[in-house]
Image 1: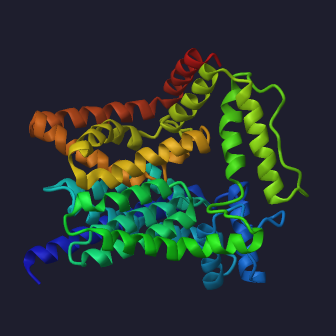
Image 2: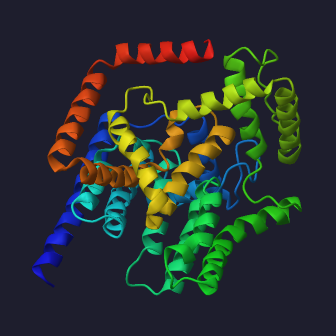
Image 3: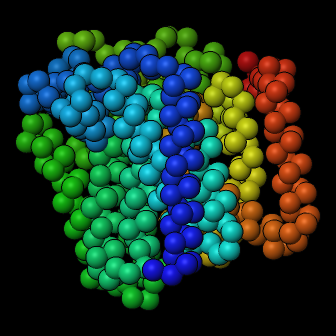
Length: 419
C-alpha cells in the first residue's frame, strides 16, 4: 500500500468519524423521538413482523406501507429488543456510512478537493443529520440511494456486475419508498449513454436485479388482493391529501378533509380517495390547481424545518448551478434525475412538508459540490472563496436572527398566496 493509499484511507475514515460524531451528538442533544403518526405505524408493522410473523398495520392493513423501513426496524428489534435508542444508534451508523459512500462516489465524479468538500458537507448537512434521530424512513432511504449509485459507478467491477448490483440495491431503495422508481428506470435506460461498455445485457441485468427484489413485494400483494399493486394501497390517499391540504389552506375545500373509516377495506378506501380527489379537482380552476401545486413545490424548498436550515441554504444555490452543469456532464445525470424526479413527485404526491427533500439530500450535496467546482473554475479560486465565505456568514446571521426572518418569509408567502 502506497503512502497516497494510506492518506486516502485516513481521509475517508475522517469523514466517517466526523459524520458519526455529529450524528451521535445531535441525537444525544435531541433525546428520544416521539413515536406518533408515521413513526407509530412503522413501529407497529415491525412489531407485528417480529411477534406474529405477519406484516400488519394498526387497522389490519397489509400493504398500506412499503416494507423496507419496517423490515429495518424489525431487524433492530430482533437484535436489540424493543429499543428506540438502538434504532437511533443504528441510524447514526447508517448516516455516517452514507457520508463515507458519498465521499467515495464523489471521487469518481469530481476532481481535486471537491470529493472531500462533498464528504465534509454531508457530515454536517442538517437534512442528513436530523433524520437519524427520528423513527422515519429518510435515513435508510438516503443510505440505499447512495449505496446503489456507489455500486453503479464502481471502477473495478465489470459492467454487468455494476448493473446487477444497481438493480438489486435500487430494488431495496424502492421497498423503502416508491417515488424513486422513475429515476431508477431512467438511469437504467440511460446507462449506455453514460458508458460505452454498457449495452442490452447490462440493462437486462439491472432490470432483473430490480425485479428480483421489488417482485417479492408485488407478488405478495397480488397473492393477497388478486390485483397488481406495485407500491402500496395508500397511494391514492397521498394524491388526495397533496391537493386537499394546499386547497384547504386557501379556503378552496370547505367540506373538510375526508378520512377513511377504520373498518373500511384498503382497496375500498383507495377507491374513495380517488373519488374525493376527482371531485375536489373538478371544482378548482386550472389556476387554482396550479397555485395549489406550486405552493407544495415552494414549501418543499422552503428553508425552515421549522428552524432555519443554514446548511441547506448554503448548498442550494450551488446545487442549482450543479443541475446546469449536469446537462453537459452525463456522469451527473443520475444525481440530477433523482433530485428533480423526487421533488416533482412529492409536489403532486406528498404535500407541502419541507422534510420531503431530506431523502435526496446526498445528491443535493453532490450537485452542490459540482456547482462549487464550476463557480470556482469560472470566477477563480480567490473570488470563489471570498464569495462562499460571505454566503456562509450571511446564512449564519440569518440563522441567528431566524425568528424575524421567518416572519418575513411567511409574510412573503401570504403575499403570494393570500394566506
